[in-house]
Image (cartoon, rainbow, N blue to C red):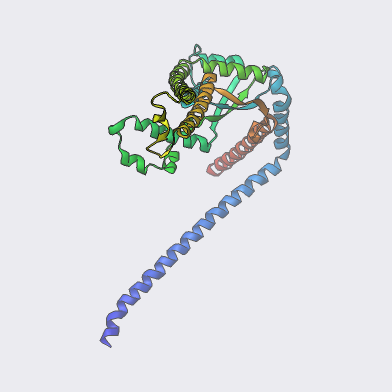
Length: 351
């Protein structure tokens, strides 16, 4: 009996607290639904206002659509905004220049850009109003960048923390890559001129390839590739020389030292087979080096030519855009009229 009396107050308090918590949640849910219903009522009230003044709404929307479709192109000289896209292949240094040029072009209207800047001058001469880049992720770029970091690290010798690179996997490297690390970049342009896409493309690519930073990167990479190419060619010529010497030695069996190159004691194989295998490796490396050299000499390469594309956004449709402006203007006028009526009613009640 005493135990029941001892436990009953605590149980009652717990039940009271639970009921208060449930009521609290219930009132909170009710208040949320009341707020949502008030917003719905406000939207319905606004739609009723538009319906009452439908003549004003439709008139201003039609005027805006006509202005965006016919009048605005006539005032701007008959030249409408055109959308273009192209895909280029570049290295990280060239990509930085691409993004810098994009910032210059996009900020020329928002800020007081220096009119003597070459990028801004180029954009104005080509009629480029907006420029955007979009990196195209490719597995080749991830793998090449990953092994390039590993190969560069091996040049440091004992200064490199081998434990770090043993735990440095491909997924971690991909997550740390920037958009400028991808070689393929999609360029989107908004152009307001009658110039041909080929003219715009050639002038843009020529400007980018002649920038000092791009030229320095190109020259330094070409220098390293030329050294590697010469070394590989020298190794291939050395192997060919050894084969020629071997063939001449076989013609003269009395020559001393003929059997010194018959067997490779390390691999227990034929020396000629080993030389052929190494020659094949060197030829493959030479092929890859010459491809990299050819790509480097071209600088920023055009993968897909500049082509006209349709407007991807409804807001870029000038007719629809100014029709919506008309709707906003009509709504503002109607709300101002309602506010004026409210002020008159408030004034009459005070008087």
